[in-house]
Amino acid sequence: INGQEKIDYVFKVVVIGDSAVGKTQILSRFTKNEFCFDSKSTIGVEFQTRTVTIKGKLIKAQIWDTAGQERYRAVTSAYYRGALGAMLVYDITKRQTFDHVARWVEELRAHADNSIVIMLVGNKADLGEQRDVPTEDAVEFAEDQGLFFSETSAFSGENVDTAFFSVLEKIYGVV
Ligand code: GDP
Ligand code: MG
Image (cartoon, rainbow, N blue to C red; front, side, top):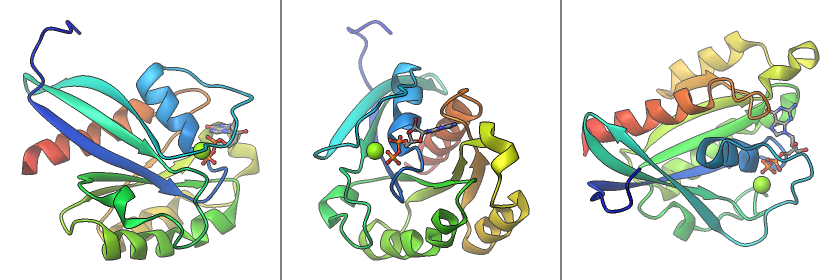
């Protein structure tokens, strides 16, 4: 992208979910097309950006990563402020991380804007042999709660762009 082109919109998207589900790796796959094996757990709230084109408009996606604050209710409302989208990530090989998804939805309903676009993301799809969460369970939950749903692999890159683009396009449709 030519740095002199004018950004039409900045969309803030937050990434949430239990610790170690792959939030930081999903973000780094989307913004840098990288996967880092020895990533440290995140310290301090941070975001990364990637500028994309949607329907001819330049959109800067500002993707926020939690700061090792994934304990229940530890993420502050400042984190959610102004967020137009959320990637709610669980690990398909760890049932507990999916069982906690309902709590994260509650958090979003409590702190984020009502119109926030939420994508439920089952990450680590490359580890299918260790699957602990059937896809149908997630599909059912997502339909129930009115969320988008995708299974991704930050490791292989599978569906990561698609999931982010779905959220950004949906946001674009409502701004
Ligand atoms: P976070 O705490 O949610 O930010 O999780 P991280 O992004 O730090 O990832 C936690 C661990 O899972 C790290 O060891 C990553 O290398 C690993 N991981 C993340 N995404 C994937 C994935 O898609 N596939 C596999 N196999 N491992 C992953
Ligand atoms: Mg992290």
